[in-house]
Image (cartoon, rainbow, N blue to C red; front, top):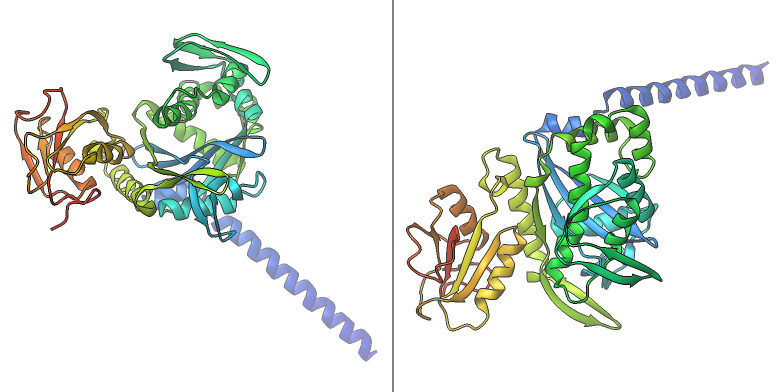
Amino acid sequence: MARALIDKSVLYLVIIVVALVAFAVIMVQALKVEPIQEAVNDDRPLNMAIIVEHGGKPIITQLMMYYPGNARGALLDIPADTGLILSSVNRVDRIDAVYKPEHPRDYLNEIAGLTGTKIDHYLIMDLDGYSGMVDVLDGVTVFIPNRVDLDLDGQRVILPSGSVVLDGAKARLFALYRDPERSDAEHVEQRQLIVQTLLRRLRERSDYVSKPQVFDALSSQVRSDFGRDSLKRLLQEFARMDTDRVVLQRLTGTYRRVEEQVLLFPAWDGQLAKDIVKQTLNALLNAEATAVEDKVFTLEILNGTASRGLAQKTAEIFESFGYEVLSVANASTTDVAKTSVIDVYDEPEAAARVADVIRCREVATESAEEGSGAPVDFIVVLGQDFDGRYCVD
């Protein structure tokens, strides 16, 4: 009899514990806020990795920083051959060495360490999935500067120059296409164009995308840590975003050979990447931020020192932040003491942001009397206080 009582007591205890656990799970789910709504509630940007993979490795990785408060976004390109001391394997290697298609968290953690920011979520498509999304959306429009005619994996690829509508199969080939004569910066532009045009098409066809059967077709092509409702909300946010005003940024650095590989080691030991992300997130939070306005500001960089190549290296820094450098030249003298930013555009807030990239304190609004005469918005004159990254006292 005692044994029976004990057994019943144990049974009742188990039932109570199971009930409490079930109640706790229900409460957690009830209190859990949808992630995009949570970003809205917290008034903060949402960071996500958009990845296109091929053969189990990423060929395109874009860190997308999106602020729901003003529907503004930015894309930072993460090259697959970025060289790092990978924390998850404790060795120097290319960043995609830790990529696992079904378990991308180690890869995302390396990106987070590189950029100094948390990666909230991810969207992953393989090339077939990307091609399938393009077909569901009835094609994407891209601008191809030069006619493409080559053999790719035994298949002849012909794409005309100019503005071209690509179906899924051609979009897939365009994503794989690499012109050896193009610069690294142009390859970055191509990768970002692939993502940007897809986002643009999702916005253009937002009413169509909202149909249940179309959403199901699109979502089946993507792997994500977003739930179904959250993914639907994300596509609604893409419909709000002006994709033509997305800020495009890239990593710069130095290529070095490590064993049998040539890797891109980020400039300034990765600090530049962290600075890019920090300034971008701050700009996105400001609804009036000139860094994310319609205009892409143009610069001229003048070297006012005897240090050769300083202007060109500085141009790469500003291009990483999304500015367009139209001219690089020498100043009229090589003994400029203080670095300055000349505001030709007469936009003090924008000039302050340009100056902040290199921590320059000297900003003047005046006509472009110095320089090549190129029609630029700002002229940066480098002085002896500039150490190649920052102005120092």
